[in-house]
Image 1 (cartoon, one colour):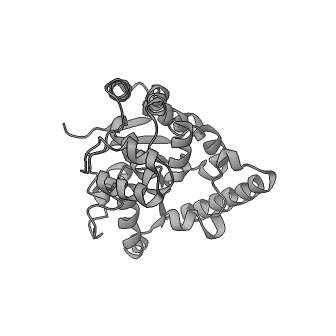
Image 2 (cartoon, rainbow, N blue to C red):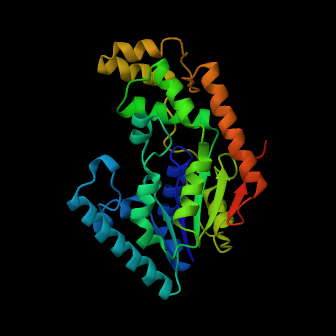
Image 3 (cartoon, rainbow, N blue to C red):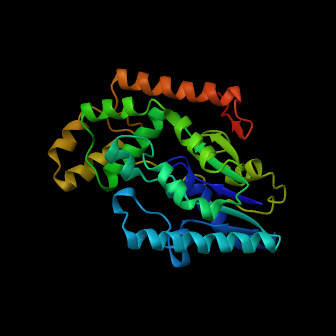
Length: 289
């Protein structure tokens, strides 16, 4: 059985990956191969994922070669009777692209198309989602910390407007690209702090009780005070002004009431669609309210 965890970003993906990496030997002893970002982004598979703006003939050929090598690895593990859990959130895209285009994984279709040869035999794709306002604010906090100033009010309105399709667009793209696979969707808050139980839930593997979890939270969003200090260090007066009235705590909200309303409506639409179970390939685990 092959399970591919797609993230999304900012849904406790680092905790999931770190916990499995810490247990790599224990997993192997149970006949489970774990492939995480350190394997997928380097070595034989380096170049597997390409940003749309960076596509060249050379990079495309390199990506094809990496996809073939990954396919060969997955086939080899399957033939040996071993199970595989692969986790790489950048398969969907990346936060920089989301922020630059003010949309949710704008290049997901082309990315999945390039990976079809590698993932043709995947049994389950696993996606974590969370409320869009919380998710976008977490992505923006990450972007401010690493590479962007806070967006303007107009840019924030564009993000809210462009997010009308919500997670359904992402989930449907996975279903369309891999029609033979099942898709497990887990809402943030449902087993988020328990990655081992999470893996057992989405895979059906019941022999994971020997695994150990060393961490509870990883890669947590910075406080607003920390973000202001980062912007001050850059000398970004415009960015500092945009955070001026946001307080000092951890809960960042960049959106207007109108923007929040649009994001809330889009996420409620996602939940209604997932609860209806219109596609029997999709299983949804909802967080307790």
